Image (cartoon, rainbow, N blue to C red):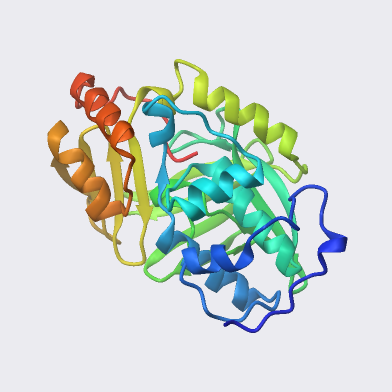
Length: 299
């Protein structure tokens, strides 16, 4: 078992529901056996392990289910049933784990750009985290699909970070926000921008309802599954599977509806209940392969 200096549950944060967390089950889910002391090294290792194990996906929505953000629901879905989730689910669970371990973690909310110009004001819709430690604040995000950072990034203007062979940069946007950028094969790509205001579970509940129910939301309109790997990243949108490698243009594979459940199992580690799998296949058969321009995934 890992060595641990777990915080006393009697001092749990009112934001994260830390005391009911099944920490051992979560650590087994992400196959983490390292130290649990609240250090930058531990934070890096936990973030990498989480991303390796827990994919980004919206399959509950497109098969007729609901997304719930209470801790019992998050543990049941992401840990016990070994499913994935999108930003609100993943970062709330990760924040709860960090809080339980004694990290000072706060919620933030970001405006997704996904390539848009940073002058554009997009809605607040993406859950992220800020962790205070090692003499400063760090951006932490395990819920931005296949393009997100794999490690914490220091909240300092102009900082550049290499996470393996993937490169990121944090700047100030023209609107005065923090701006997270990712270098792709064709240049710098704006991911999202955010401020320093603290956000709470009630805010995320509202954001979650909107993105999981609004008919214009890409998570309502599209089948989405993504994986943020160390050497290879995957993005499934409807029946198109893209594979990304550092410095290279993505490879595209088109799928048929019958192949979709197998791809989800083999490439993303996602196994659905039979009724959900049947609903997903029916949904896939009804969708056009091409996605309209301008839809933002990864939030």
